[in-house]
Length: 234
Image 1 (cartoon, one colour):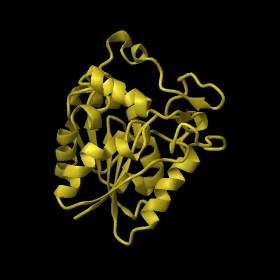
Image 2 (cartoon, helix red, strand yellow):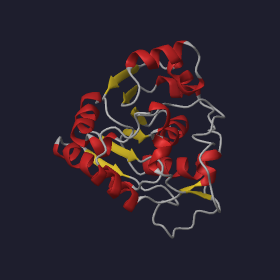
Image 3 (cartoon, one colour):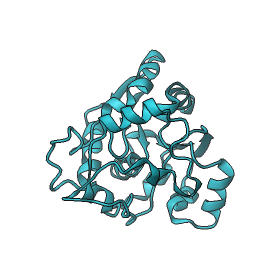
């Protein structure tokens, strides 16, 4: 049995993992879905919350457990878990990146999303469907409506801050990348070309890439398949 700490991406809280958590628990694992600071509610205080505070929340959860943990990060949550792996490389059995990747030092998660009053609201859906993007694949109108109803603004600084990394032992932690919007061939091409988003992949000691074709939110569009992929990664 493994202890799985699930970290959501932008605009989502712990409940976004509900349909993934159930089959993971049924497989015998302890599952701890997190709500990151500032994402507790529409009215939460997001002032003063940056990427460091999000990483610290995951590190605190790691420290609550006596045994090694598995970190699972979706989208922007992938940046957060990579920062936590860097701070606790000897406490993480595996890091699983769900349609995300371990970003290099100094790179922000997403500096381009528009912000207002220190927070980034969920943009209109057409932002995610420009230029043939696959982000919304698999999301029915009902799922889109449910997503928007539950969405919470993301702290601006958490999206803009550069990732702080300092311990190269992070490269020794096994990584599984579950990719929904990039194929294996595309990821390998970008990695080999030195694309910054995938630059850390070339330095990892143990890397497995799994394709799970759907949109950017497989925990909503293919939750059972995502849970099965996570179990297989263990």
